[in-house]
Length: 335
Ligand SMILES: Cc1ncc(COP(=O)(O)O)c(C=O)c1O
Image 1 (cartoon, helix red, strand yellow):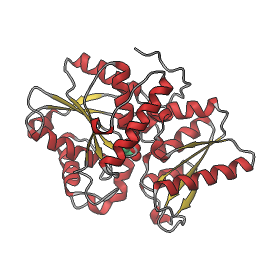
Image 2 (tube, rainbow, N blue to C red):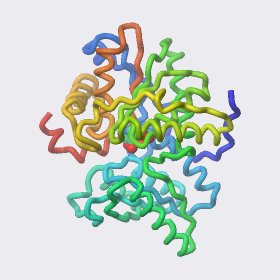
Image 3 (cartoon, helix red, strand yellow):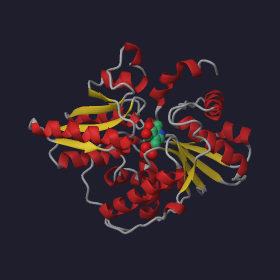
Image 4 (tube, rainbow, N blue to C red):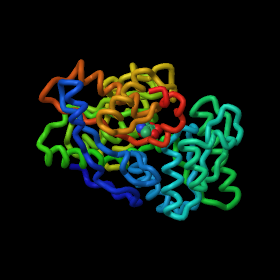
């Protein structure tokens, strides 16, 4: 095994998160046993997998003497909410650069879901009207430059926390899955998760190599095309491995991404996601959101029926994102 990267860690969240079997669901769907890794229970300000990436990212920020954390995302971003919460725990200021169609502050009505929590967490909010992620990241760099000119020490985290340092935060997720599946006596035939910036999926691929587990990892894209996301993941995996002190190259074509659950685009609910949300809530008491986990679960349900068979085990990573449910009260109230 490569040596453990000598990286400072912050300590956010409670681990291991539970691994639970969705017995009622498995019975309804037929075929494989379906498990859920409850990363929605990591525990910081309503939780989510992103907490893991913030352990490495904010550990690195502390090593660099940062006093302000700058990151960016859309109003539906869970990453920015968890960043604000973790920064508060360390006594660092959080400045969130938020994509907004008109580059304006939100009114009270707009304070819902994650944006409401960002407000309660007391993060500084800058709204920009960016057309693309690169525009948003450019705006974030501008904000960081202003902070530097004021004598501050900003630490800039890319959207979604997607960076080699962020990906290293997920190494332990794979180790937890290995220990828990051994304990419950089953072999993991696939891991599925929502994939946006690609950081979680990169971390899972990296974790597989790091822990010699080789679990097939399937990402359900919630915004990017397969080609764009695979190229990002391939790059992040290679660079994160370098940080961890080993060599790992994964060709884009070997990265498994499904794009048939995305629908019309990011944050636009699909019928399949909405029925997955209803099914999981009403059969398992498990809550999912329309933007991320609902779409990923639609993929799990399909694959459980078409690609996996009885005797196999698939693990769905519940990556969190539950505050996002409240952005969809109209749609969800029709379920
Ligand atoms: C709840 C949730 N699930 C999954 C993802 C996708 O993670 P990543 O951006 O690391 O691909 C996100 C990220 O934005 C998220 O908030």
